[in-house]
Image (cartoon, rainbow, N blue to C red; front, side, top):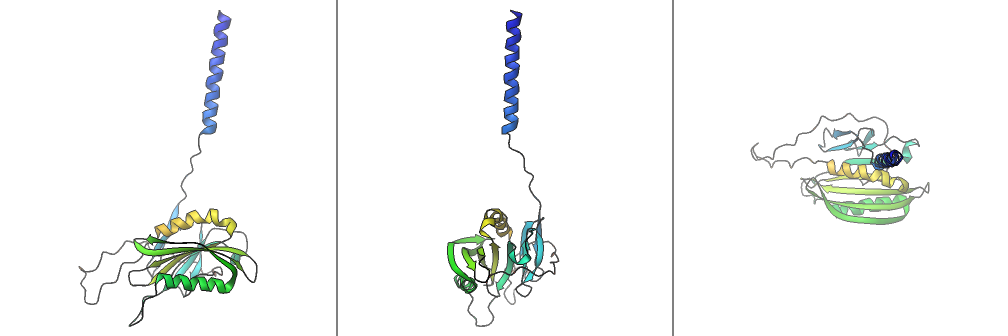
Length: 230
């Protein structure tokens, strides 16, 4: 009788031990969220967040934008990167404002001039910080080098009919890694409020958004990118 009891206890202990091991093996590891930092352009006024492990590569579009990118081993011209900029300023005088559709057509034409086999993979309307926007994804082959690129361009209409852009340029093999942080950069981007009309009082103007102090960009040259025209 004692032998039977001992055997039963051993079986029960073995089953509980197996269950504990199985529970530990199936438990998903907890991934700590990576910290992000914020950049605010001192003159243009837009702000966005990007991973703290990324670097600020430098200015672009005559100082109206910046380039950020994760650390990479290849030469700088081949880096996957994200460009954030004011690409078309507000119209002056009797000028007609440039629409987002026109900005996209100019950008696609610019890419077509520098690449071959240009293919539009996706185009859709969206909003960024409550403002009308459109995104377009292109695939092309660079003529001089034969290198394949994916460009995802998001154009946003600002409060004074200016056009901003957030552009991802990466190798097709890097898209799965680069797209999630790029989407978060776009979602974190805030635009300046509309300027008050001439003669308007402080009470008429919308409240200003709080922003972080501008981060001093690196003076290193940004990678060559087929980004929207100036």
